[in-house]
Length: 138
Image 1 (tube, helix red, strand yellow):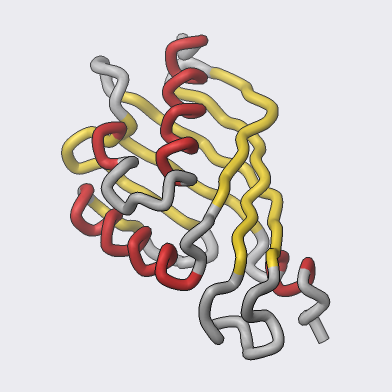
Image 2 (image 1 turned 180 degrees about the vertical axis):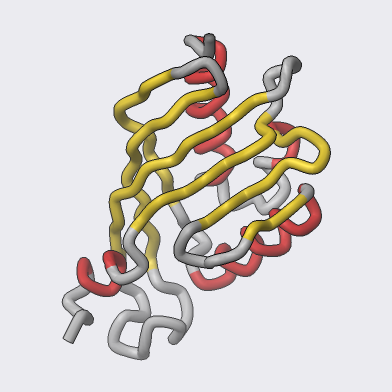
């Protein structure tokens, strides 16, 4: 059964996602680990693919912050809620959003191998929540 070790890994992984360093989450993933971001719509398989996806996001949102909150465990892993926020650094969300901070709530499910490395990360969040938090939802 997953327990405190996996919760601690989840917290450390989300600190790495929040570090602004595209390489920081890498040590937490098993070889062949999978990131499934529901909004992005496709799996990223292996650290090079995951890193490329993450580094692209950091260009638009270099101060990305993911703060975990409530945790649940089962035999395979851990699920938890979080709040994601960042300042818009480009015109990606429109020129009126540049320089403003958005937020979005979500949930993640992590599975682990026997060595405590993440084999699967599934992130659930609403694709329009960031824009809505900026008042850009029309």
